Image (cartoon, rainbow, N blue to C red; front, side):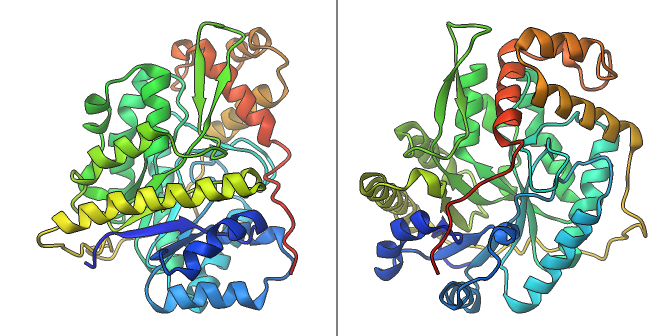
Length: 384
């Protein structure tokens, strides 16, 4: 393996590209992570952006990051099949070093609307997730990974996520994106010690790390608490850079460290300057780690042997109905009390979802997330 590469999440977004351009021109950016399924927002793609992608692709330094697949949806949709078909076509045009998706299911009924939220860790969801990962690997013909989720309803869920991720990706000998701001959210929201939290993850499977910022939200349910949200709209906190320092040495197969920030938060020169400073800080930490690498090993994270894929994607009607019920409650409830009453009267009560253990402030946060994104992810128009 070459040394760990400092990368940026780079999409067809005007402010993000303005912020990134000086770094690209100075040849500081060693790899690009591209959210390929966000192309639906752009009827045409400028030639210069295609050339940028191909330049990194030809060097084996382009990685793909999915947003909308909704890995754990109980019902297979035509849009998911279109997603796979698009990935298959793009993989013939570009050389992806790997492909990743988010852990969770999308709340919105529309394929491009909603936000990823957690699911119960059951044999049913495990089988569906493994089935979907095999289909992604088959379409992309490259290593496949999943990103840990920032949101959780309870401390027990936080502590179990790492092991469940490991069981999922084992099916394709896949890997994990360890998003450190997502860990930061869980450390702050549930007061879980870092050592206890990170010990639950198979760090030998971490091939990529995400670094980003976020924001704090107030709680009406518990005014004494503030909830850390993974909004990607602020500079990287010093604590997250500290997590990067603590974590990198524990990840022997790490290949990429990626800076993320949404374009809409980079509309001022000051925020663009801070973005570049964050990248340079991240790159300095990566450079110091590279100097300590004695014998880098290139672990492929490709399937060790052929695997079987069912003719029809796995589905579960009960899980699908519960997901749609939960999404509807979160997207429409006006207050926490209204949401709680609806949950207790629903099919989720006394089920494997364990809603009785959900913390009130996290139900409130799930409502805020679902209601914020139910109309879809909107990015600024790019002048071609």
